[in-house]
Image (cartoon, rainbow over the protein chains, first blue to last red):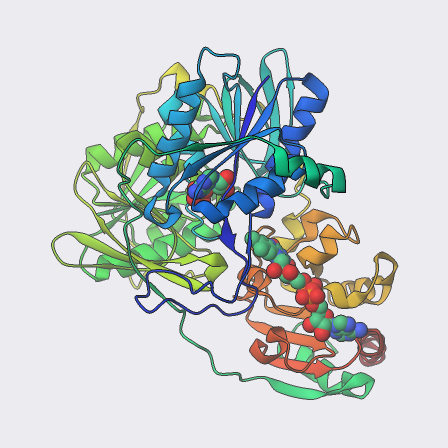
Length: 256
Length: 328
Ligand SMILES: Cc1cc2nc3c(=O)[nH]c(=O)nc-3n(C[C@H](O)[C@H](O)[C@H](O)COP(=O)(O)OP(=O)(O)OC[C@H]3O[C@@H](n4cnc5c(N)ncnc54)[C@H](O)[C@@H]3O)c2cc1C
Ligand SMILES: Nc1ncnc2c1ncn2[C@@H]1O[C@H](COP(=O)(O)O)[C@@H](O)[C@H]1O
């Protein structure tokens, strides 16, 4: 049972962002980088699969040299090896990323490292395209379940569940398969110190994409219209309670 | 022509789909023809009334027993057939889990681009659709130009609450046609095999008129008593920040934000929440935002409509007492 997890290095801005001069990207000079919480859950799931079923878990990213940082984070959580498709991820649209991942899966087919399950996040934290997993599944001809909150593998099948419009929905698909994971049902572990040390020595295979990316179609970025602060400060501390309840009455959420 | 994938529930058109129909009329007005609706599988009769109120000129109903259990691939097969048969130049859905999923399947099947989470879309020159869509949880908007042609429509999902759903100026009496989409066995592999209707734990949160938000400022798992009381007094639901769920103070299904639920209540009362963009992404469309925070420069305070500065553990009990007093 071999699992491949796809993660993406994304800017970790917490307040308003600024754009680069050409407006083609977010100015990242003053922000750190991270991966999506969804993807951290996917990494955790891959590590747990190895603990339960044996086999291997590998992590993959399509990104610049610096994305090694995110690969090491995943390795520190217990993933054994990494594949780094070295490329400018901004030049890669979701179809390109799916193609790059499919190429790696294809190259491993029939070998000891043949991939049985690809895990991705439900949506990337920066571009939020909601597509890579699905496009990958079509390239591979495998079934795909998205928005998976938790799952288990048994007898060559995956039982997965996620939130549907009317409640919890269950899926049951044969391997090989693609799953996209949502935060909520799986709790990622904090990397241990020995984990971090091991991660530094874990093998990272560098891959050059074998095709020209079609691109994302981005024309430019815009900042959302800035709203001048209109806040009305009702007061300080407990003394402001009557003023606050006046507002609640005004907007009709509390009756007399 | 704009074909809208409409999701339905027991009382008719889903809220986000109603928003998408409203949004579609805006695109149509900018020059892309009329609006038609696609409904997949069994649906309640009141859906038709809702679609007429939205002024759609035609309803296409994909009907097949195999569509009774949801499968994104099967829905996509239906959408591809309908888009081809009608010559739609745009295929639009809500950026709901299903809307995004089905359109991504369509994109993969037809090898087309797709723009998720659009906040505006206007007909451009030479058959293009100019779309601005939310990226980075809405902190920036990405402009993309999609080409839409019969057989190769522009694929767009509309961000929740980017428009207020409103009926058309003039209702229509749409034609209704039923068709059987071409489905293969492969389209049915990943389908819902079982669903548990009652356990959608975030259901109350996403539909509540009042959401009381709680962040790191609450201080601990055992510090939620006053906030839960306030939630109950207002007949609302509790929503929390990611810090609160990561620390294990509250369950994840209460999380609001980019990787949690998106809420659009009449009131969001944010207590001890700084207002990071990823949290803001989940509640910015609340009609009224009130912040309670010790820091008068926290983004949640400066972006709110009203704020009270101070310790939430002093303010919230006083608010509870005031509400009880006035209720008598
Ligand atoms: C890809 C990604 C996705 C994310 N998704 C989400 C998401 O879905 N939802 C989400 O919420 N976050 C999300 N985050 C995290 C987000 O960036 C913030 O870290 C988080 O929202 C901060 O939570 P907070 O406001 O509770 O905590 P803090 O930022 O620590 O803010 C605490 C606030 O409480 C105030 N305070 C402290 N004590 C008191 C007191 N006694 N009384 C009143 N006020 C007090 C402080 O002044 C401060 O403003 C995501 C991050 C990333 C990178
Ligand atoms: N550049 C990338 N490298 C590796 N994985 C990616 C990349 N971009 C997207 N993904 C994966 O695909 C998921 C969905 O991304 P998207 O379709 O772009 O929203 C993400 O959560 C990642 O798991």
